[in-house]
Image 1 (tube, protein in one colour):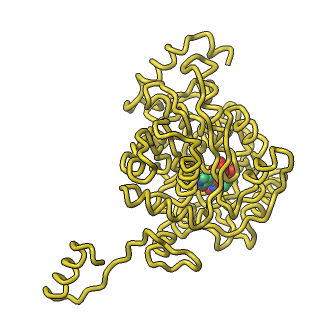
Image 2 (tube, helix red, strand yellow; image 1 turned 30 degrees about the horizontal axis):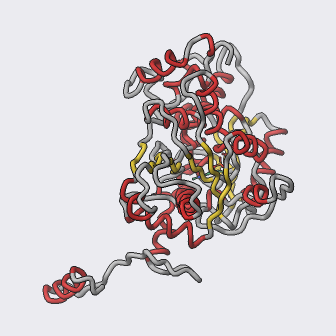
Image 3 (cartoon, rainbow, N blue to C red; image 1 turned 120 degrees about the vertical axis):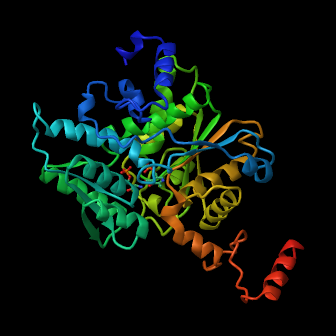
Amino acid sequence: MDALARFPGSYWRDLFDSRVGRTTWPYGSGVWSKKEFVLPEIDSDHIVSLFEGNSNLFWAERLGREHLGGMNDLWVKQCGISHTGSFKDLGMTALVSQVNRLRRAPLSRPINGVGCASTGDTSAALSAYCAAAGIPAIVFLPADRISLQQLIQPIANGATVLSLDTDFDGCMRLIREVTAELPIYLANSLNSLRLEGQKTAAIEILQQFNWQVPDWVIIPGGNLGNIYAFYKGFEMCRVLGLVDRVPRLVCAQAANANPLYRYYKSGWTDFQSLVAGTTFASAIQIGDPVSIDRAVVALKATDGIVEEATEEELMDATALADLTGMFACPHTGVALAALFKLRDQGIIGTNDRTVVVSTAHGLKFTQSKIDYHDKNIKDMLCQYANPPISVKPDFGSVMDVLQKKLNGKI
Ligand SMILES: Cc1ncc(COP(=O)(O)O)c(C=O)c1O
Ligand SMILES: N[C@@H](CCOP(=O)(O)O)C(=O)O
């Protein structure tokens, strides 16, 4: 930080702005366009990048206006529209690049592979970046708890996939033990290299707002590395003079997997890990988050809030977002449901500039949408379901249905 502080904030803003939209290696990446803030010493030839980042900041105009009491400054940071379909690409380019550097001469460290436990997105990103660099990847997955789309990603990218009959927290414990014994480098967000990459999403938001600071940023939380990464990105820009304040952060959890929410509600006095229950937001089905302490730092420093969302709340929020043109994943639904609650309570105001962080692509979680629109979820009304209409293939039947539809009768 001392070295970076030798230059004024305006120098960094201009430098980062000058790199957007270029293809010059490695600055065409949203992460490496901020190389000096991420891993300043790495040689560009050692970087493993798929030109991640630079994701869309979507103006959720209709969702805000029609469903959130006339909110007019609501934005969704589409971190899931990325190479492997989640924000994990941002951190994985930093981590795998560093491993690549360590394995090569002159350092030539004996690292035989890189490993992680995963609920499906970290494993997909690790496998893709390792495949690009020719580094063996080993992933520990909780059997039958991740989507088919997530499962096929490391398989297709040639990783060693271990499907374990336990939950994510069980996989996490095992990978920590294994990486302590074998020359396998740990790629979970315990490793701060991941957070160095992930923090660039926060810097990117500031840049996309022309270096103006939003009032609120809402982030779905599971293992809790990302909430800290966002804090770090915002705080670094404040300290180095790129902006003059940081936004208030909200961490949103599924009510079925809510150890941080309970801790927050106890006034930060009583943290208890738990066995996470099943949730449609399966990537945050985590009961013993490894970055719990970092999350508390981030929330305290930003006057932050923790909210939770039930299964019905998160699925309804996802469906409403989709009905206004998005294709949100259930984790984004958790963050949106938190926004609905904070609007109802009057905590987030109509004119507050608010960013919801969308963490994965909806196409990775289609089964939950199919179940919702089929109204095939026990004890859930699925009030925004839009099931297909079966029609006989003749002109009369089709006209009949369309007339009823146009007259609002179905
Ligand atoms: C899609 C998605 N959203 C949110 C999260 C939560 O991120 P974190 O574990 O950093 O809290 C994860 C992973 O945990 C994820 O895969
Ligand atoms: N959702 C994550 C869980 C692990 O998180 P990490 O950021 O600590 O690697 C996943 O996709 O595996």
